[in-house]
Image (cartoon, rainbow, N blue to C red):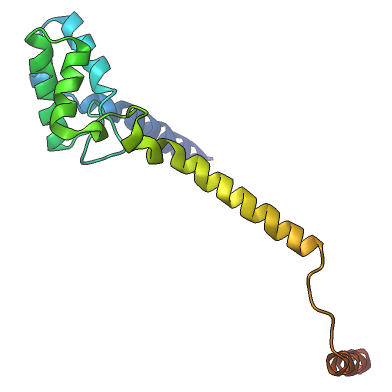
Length: 160
């Protein structure tokens, strides 16, 4: 019973730490004093990718580059940039890759359409394979192969 309680407590602590970890990424020294501007900065930083981590927003990442991007973003917002202007400034420096949701344009078509294309090609391949198996495209046995199979089956039946 103690082991179960200890395991449950451990899982609870790990869950709390996993949920709270992104909140630790933004340090107090980089936060803006105006709560409205800070809220805007947090909202925009959730839309920007950490170019080091690549799977996290800069708001969630502890990477030094993500810290630098958060500071730059807050400087731009404090200077009076709109959210779109601040994002455009970072996109101009790092490209569309810095956006967690890149725009649908010719240079990102593969990114947006690639998974669907791979799924479609795989589905067509699976359908063709299943159809070929269902048609029975296996070649019939030659007379020599039939004789060998009969011999093998006869010896198999004699075994205990």
